[in-house]
Every structure is written in structure tokens, then in C-alpha cells.
Image (cartoon, rainbow, N blue to C red; front, side):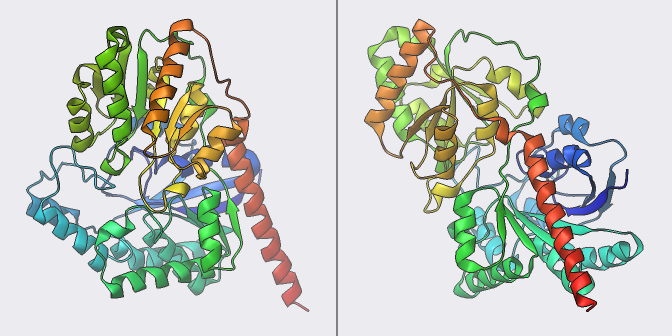
Length: 445
């Protein structure tokens, strides 16, 4: 079978762990079913915040993966900050031990003002040189870049300008609209540079993909280019043959990095008041966090008398998590509390859906993630700061736990399966190639 070929430029690839790697790993897993052959271009020596060997099983057989070295400033950063060479650099300003000091703040300033668009910028020119030659020697139908890091998009833009090849830019997160953009301590000149690069990429791409409607709406203010929404999702194969378990505890589970700006203080206060007045509730309660949890969150939990209910599990391989989710009663989703919180769609929401456990989502009511929960009837949506609503919701959920009743029956989630989303992707790519062929034919007359 002759498949069309897509060169996918991504920083994250197995054995990288976390959410960033999963989108294009899962697309690549299913693209062949829809007539496309993925070819991966990725660094050979990247700085991953975490590793997950279990993702290696999802790489298709005989997949072409091109790896080239990258220069990054993290060795210098680790040396100056006193970190061990083997220590992982965390993302999203997660701090597991204490509040960031002067040196950490200085590094943030350097990151935002010297490394534009990001610390992977030194990979752009060597990648363009290598890929320009490689693409000329190997037939490719389309180039796809995925960011962050958004320096990947600058590689795609340069290849399009140099080779006149079709280029699709995929945004897993916004660029200047990303939730931590204001924490980068940008100068006016640096802010302007970021916005210029963002607009140039949005205008130059043949097509843009976002993971949600809010991001699409924001980009439509910047560019008149065509934009598709292709969500993240869950892989049904990760949840096959899992036994349904009746939870032995009123277990509230959170998976993934738990950042300081995600800290739901009103939740800890509500739970603290409930355990103080009901010993049975206290004995049944468990807070189970899987992943890295910021020290400020642990402090607030302990201040509300919940230390005895807290169970912290370090980062687990992705394939171990679905089984543990089946032991939860509630899945906690707490969105970052920033100006653009309404279009943050954390990838964990889709796997929460697949677990078929009720979701307790603390997020804006008009957010993309709230719309997903509403349309799938999968849980409660609590706006930020609504302590009394959280408290009454917890009591309703606890009543369901005791009675064994099921308030929510998750439905309409098949549209978020990785296979279905890959079909959508390949349909869009086919349209791009068709339009390209049509343009070639038109130019002959």
C-alpha cells in the first residue's frame, strides 16, 4: 500500500514521559490505518522532565525516527543552581521543596528574555540545514510541527520558505497566551518579539491545528489562516480488560504534575471542615496524588488537618495509571488559575473520561474543559472560589459513595478516542494535499 508521508517535527518522543509526548505518539500509532506514513524528527539528547519506558510499546513497527543532537542551556543551569547533572528540570514552575529564590527568579528572566521563543532555539538552524537536504533526497508530502516548544514551528516555517513544502502547525498549548507567559518577566522588547514570531508562524502555515475552541478563537484574532480543532484524547487500548472495582475508600485521585497555580485551597478547607465534624468521613477519605506535587499544595493540605488522608505516589509509568484510576471514587481536575484559564484543556481530562469515574472539576464554567464534561455527563463543574458549592458537592458525592449509587453515566466519549481523532487528522491532511495538487494543476494554465 502506497501511503502519503508526513514528516513530524517534535521535541517530545519516547522515552519522554508526561502529556506532551502522547499526542503525536498516538497519532503515529494509528496514521497508517488512514493511509499516512509518519516519519519522526526529534532530538537525540533532549532534556525531558520525566521518562516513561511504557510509551515505547506504542511506537509502530519499522517507524522511521530521525534523531539529531540538540544544544540546550540546561547543563549550565544545573551547574549554577547546584542541581545534579542527572536531575530533571521540571516544567510549569513546579517546586517540590520550597519557594523559588533569587537565583530561580533570575533563571526565569533569562529564559523569557534571552531564549526566544524557548531554550530549544539552538536546534532551529542545524535542523533546517539537515532537513532541507534530507527532504530533497526523500519524498515527503507534508511537514507537521508540534509545540510547545514553539521553536519547532520556526523549523517548519523555514522549511516551507526554503522548499515550498506544505506545512501544518499543531499547537498543544498557546504561545503568548499560555498560562505562565506572564511569569517569564519579559521586557517590552522581548514581549514584542514573541508576539511577532507567533503571528509570523500563524500566517505562514498552510494550516493550523489547536486542541480546543478557546485557543482557536484567540488565534483567529491574530490570523486569518484556516484553523482546525483536533482534541487530545484517550487510547481505548490503555483501558482494555480492566476490572471494575468498588472503591474501598472515598478516594479522590489526581494524576500528573500538581502545580502551585492549580492549588484548590477551597477544596482543602472544605475537606478539613468535613473531617472535623464527621469521624466516619475522615476514616473513609483518601487523597491520592500520582505524580509530582508542589510543596505549597502539600503545606495547605496539612494545614487543614488532612495529612493523615494524603497518599503521594511518585511518577508512575503511564500504563500503570488506568488500573489505579479504577480504584478511585472521584477524579480531581483543577485548572490553572490564570487570566486564560478558560482554554486550558489538560490532557488528563480525556483519560478521566475513559476511567468512567465521576470528575470533580474546579474550573471556569465557560471553559473548554467544562464543555467537555457537560457534553459527556461525566461530573461536577465548580467555579474557582466556590467553597460552599464544593462542600455541598462533596457531601452529595459521599452520599453516593455510601449508597453505591451512580449519579453520572459517562456517555458520548468515543469521539475522543485516539483512533477517531487520528481519522480527523488524516482527513485534514488529505484536504491539504488535494488543495496542493489542485494548485499545481491550476498553475499549468
